[in-house]
Length: 173
Image 1 (cartoon, helix red, strand yellow):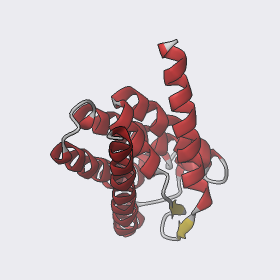
Image 2 (cartoon, rainbow, N blue to C red):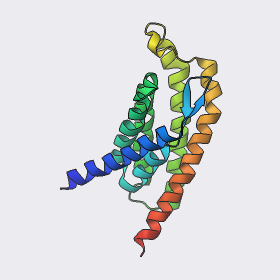
Image 3 (cartoon, helix red, strand yellow):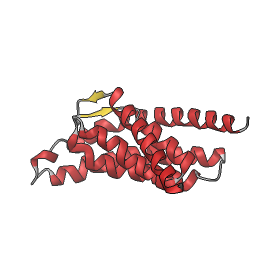
Image 4 (tube, rainbow, N blue to C red):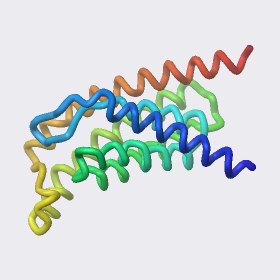
């Protein structure tokens, strides 16, 4: 029964992350990527349900959204957002501490920004030399995407913090 509950939670939050990723898609011309709010639900799932739920939500929801229109980014998204959810969950889960939530969210934003930078500046640039499908970005484009990714991460963190506070308040009634 517990396993089925966890599968349901992953499915629900993956769906929310998917929707949050495809509903607001603001293109970033430098890399062909886009600004979205799907990270909000990766963050929230990790805070509320821990590292494994956060990992699978990050792995599944945003990656499926990338598969619809931006398939070249599926690998980067799966890795970056999966790690993002895992690390936030490891820091925050079961503590309930505001300090840990802030630290976890800050780390999540850092993973988002640095992870995509590494993929776009180095990994995809190298793979793109032999597999043209991945030749979608370069170092300069990755630099140009740092600021939009930072804004995306910070806005998602603020929204996740707000949602967490609502859940906290609901638990006290």
